[in-house]
Length: 121
Image 1 (tube, rainbow, N blue to C red):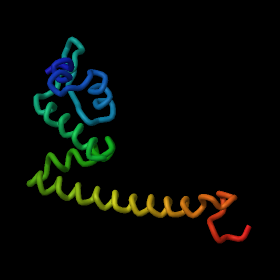
Image 2: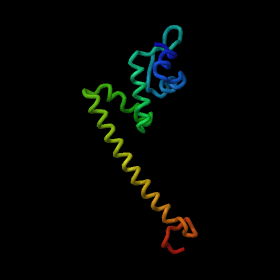
Image 3: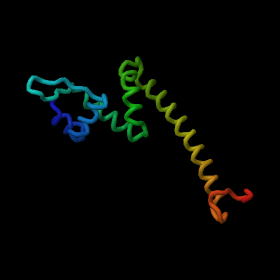
């Protein structure tokens, strides 16, 4: 299918699809007239890309894991493993942010925000 039809079916702009093609998330062959021709399975793949982004995956992560998901004997199991890995990353980031918040909170009202409460100055 041509890019306009793909964009309409996927609910995306042509520019978004061109960008995804540029970064390797989708690929279409070029017809003799220069138009892009995408296979029908591109539509559900683009829905997956949109959902994965909403779940916090970067385009680089999506691209990196795309082939392994397509080739996985059990896609649901492979996705569950990716989600579990992402949860671990989020948990680690949340711990880092909690520590950062505590450090910032310790500096509020100290007179010199560059020093935490209780430090000699």
